[in-house]
Amino acid sequence: MQHKCKVTVLDKKVYADYQEKYLADPRSGACPFYNIGDEFLFERYGSDDTFWRAGNGTQCAEAWDCISRYIYTALQGGAIMRGWTNDERIMIACCNDGTRPVIFKIERLDYKAVHFDQKLNATQKAEIIEKVKFLGKVTDAGFHRDGFLEVFLDEDIPDKPLIAIIESCGDFNVVRID
Image (tube, rainbow, N blue to C red):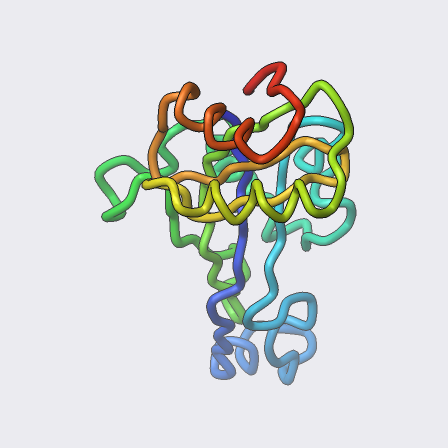
């Protein structure tokens, strides 16, 4: 099983009284870096390793300092905050700017990477995605730009039924599942 981490900006706060009292610019306002609803996806599989590049400049340094440990834990498949949240794959955290904090949802996404013995055409890919989504515990499926299938899961499923459904969609074979 592989893991990605999705970070979503849930909210932004402004404490104008603290800004007025303590900041050089007393009317700094809300964080200019993030917007509510922004989403960032981190992964460390295939040709991508967005964690070590700190989100390729998509993260404020102050926020990165606060959320990077949770992202790293998620990418390793660990419990982000066992016993603290009602789902150990999710953490709610904020940056450390006390006058204009940003609140993040950090979510571990579990998936299987399915590799094939040949390139698949668009029709085969669409059929595979459609059939795989009907398996229990599958939350989503899609093809990565590197050509492998990503099957996102609520919890792990055995490889054999997954392979059987996939290989029923054409004349190709699954060579491995990571």
